[in-house]
Image (cartoon, rainbow over all chains, first blue to last red; front, side, top):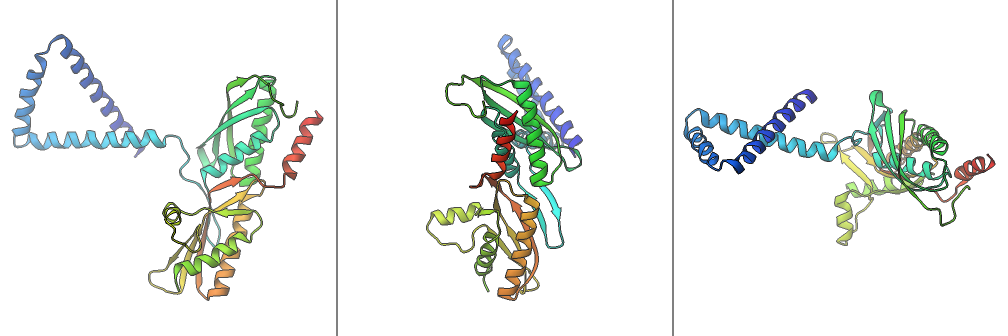
Amino acid sequence: MNGFIRVLMFIYSVVIAVISVVLLYALVDDGIFADILSPLSSIVTGPVSKYVYLFVLLLLFVTSIISITNSITYGRLNRTRLRKTEIGSVDIGADAIESIALNSARSAQVGIKNARCHVAPAKNGAIRIALSCVLYSNVEIPASMAKVQEKVKKDIERYTGIVVESVFVKVSKVEAATAKVEGR
Amino acid sequence: MTQGFVAQYAAEAALQIDGVVSLVPSFAVALKEKAGVVHEGKGIRVIFDENDDNTVSITCYPVVSYGKIIPEVAWLIQEKIKADVECFTGLNVDNVDVYVCGVVEAEDRSDTAASKKGVSEQ
């Protein structure tokens, strides 16, 4: 299914490229619209070609819808972890995992001012964590971020039982440490 | 026996578990609450079996406090809801699903205080 969607995406982007090139060419030669419109109208009125035209346009429309939904939900963990017991299933929402990661990053006491988190699925039911954080300026980034990675991984594995494949930390901004910084 | 009645028992049972902070109402229920209609047992969904009136399946949407081991809390919730609902209503609980919606920081910070100590010692 994924491969099929990828082929559709490829065709869709090629069509968009062709259309944009044609529209750009119209700047140079404005007679092109008449040249396109007359074969188009013969296609629409034709008995068989009408259905081909309909099919192609429907396909393009469906592809555009798919690409919109894909781009919105891209990379987000939507299937939550399932743990079957004899009574029922236990799911852990992505929000829950995210807030565990944020809490443990903050409680690592390495001068994280603010952080954001993104949970993505990985192979074999594991997850990947991406943290993007704002730090105070008096932080040794390599040492303390290694500490954060270790702590986040350990905490999530302990509290949820889900294997964490990797913790990716991105320092997006460093701010001057005017206020009191914890742990230093 | 109505859904709300069963849901109330289930909600009470879930909130008794140590580590459950609250239950998250679904979007429709939240709207209903805004409109002023009292909904019984929010954060719990009760579905009666189509063929058998005495069988229900329950889904619970809790928020767990930070520092608790989520699978253990969830198993406790399942057992407690199943036992309580079967005991009080006499219905047959088919399955109890738990969907942990969120985690909030707990009041007591013994766990984080310990880690703070460990960092400052270095």
